[in-house]
Image (tube, rainbow, N blue to C red; front, top):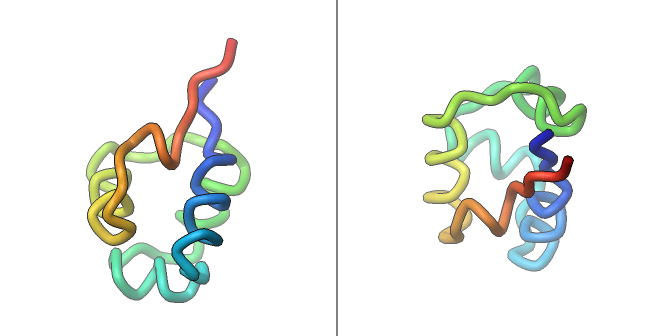
Length: 65
């Protein structure tokens, strides 16, 4: 299972709110809800988030068995 706990830590370190993330990535509140629930996210969305936060995928997502 892929979880997004690291996303919230990275956002906090970079002083990014969910509003700022939505605005800079062009994603909607439904996508934020899906991230919080660790549900499926498109890879293009992950790419947008990494670009906005200037980070790597492992800074926002983690695979756990």
